Image: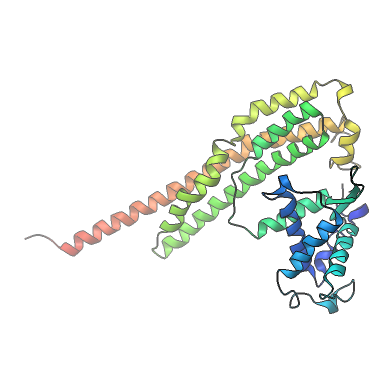
Length: 325
């Protein structure tokens, strides 16, 4: 499915206006409120609560230097009228498909939330603000958990989340391979300058390996969970037709429209299960071996350079003493 269709025709337009920094800050504040540590106790995001949140962002800093009113397509920005500006931001974000709203059944108030696209793009913006804040990767376990959840409740969103997490496993492993490749290049560059990147190596052992790579190689190892995931996929395939909701999955899942029948033969559910299985197979058969090789190359290269440095220092020490009489 093409991204810029229907209500997402001008999805990124708010981030091209002069007040784009303000809009991005409001989006990230909302993301933190809905998905941050305190999200479990959060009240429904009514229009009034959302307006108060955006006003808090407006008061958090001086935006006058960042808002270029003359270049805004939507007109002059009046920063002095906080209530009106916050309401305008809410309308714009809903109009351009970042937010969506529905009527709460209990209070009959409008309750706002991110659209699926708005949630993922804002999540990426939030991560850019904390590039060193890495959590333990649990993508493979999450994929398995959502497949099990689908078998309990038959909610298509669980299948879509399982597909998303399975794809993230491959992306994470590829990022790790590129990380070690860059480290090896850095060692070669430092060797030319007769330096040894001991600080980077110590940081890798003390921090990054323990917090990131150890989880992906042990607790979140794709090979460790592969058999259980394949068994869950088989259980879903064996479900009776009365339990399946293909029509809902075909609406939500990103099955490319107009694809040749031979490419996506069968029901959308079958196609989605094949994609999850293919992602797991790719992680186990291709990316994990590449990661182990890249990590081994880095450690071997570093230890080789370390031996050379130690040998040179030993040789230099012996020559400084000189021959004995």
